[in-house]
Length: 240
Image (cartoon, rainbow, N blue to C red; front, side, top):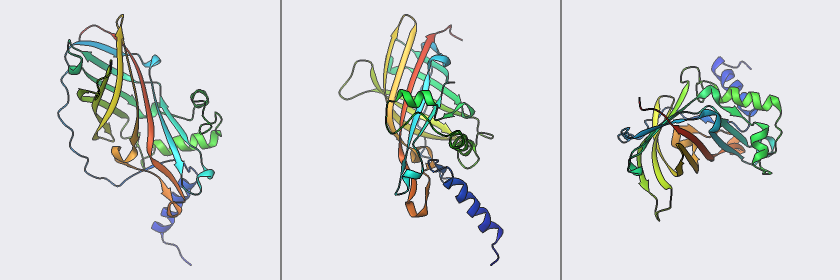
């Protein structure tokens, strides 16, 4: 039986995904919801300290063949950007960015620090390297053509009920040159010229225009929901 070239290419693509059972793929292009006007930058600037800041994303396997894969821990230690703090905290704004190429996959130390049976420290090098290649490929983040992910403040609002140092941050996230607005519960504190910002939330891949991986009629898939943790340390800097 002769197999056409398009069918062969499709079969090879599915086989590659099956070799990386925890990896999501990008959905077909769709028009993202419009993002509200971004917040203006006013107040004292605080520069993000990359060596002290961390983004981590926990992605979970699913499906009846989930045992064939493992949960992933994606991270970046190379966050950059600036926070601007005026007298009124809810008028604060920020821009935070990181290079797609800075994303790591399943660092043993980070997995061990979770102290979770869902994330045993050791992951085979072949699985780790293959997952990262797939993540940066044109099918997903397309790091070669879209080298940066950017988070920018749209607005800050009080949480209900109000919490000391707690706000709801409406954030525009630029992924592959498409902007998507998300909401993050944020905790912040400022002391001695240092600003610390933490956010922990559940975020759906589909909110960023990505489609979770699924194969074999759903027997092998990745959950749409992922757990995102953001720890940022920024230091007061001279106004530009």
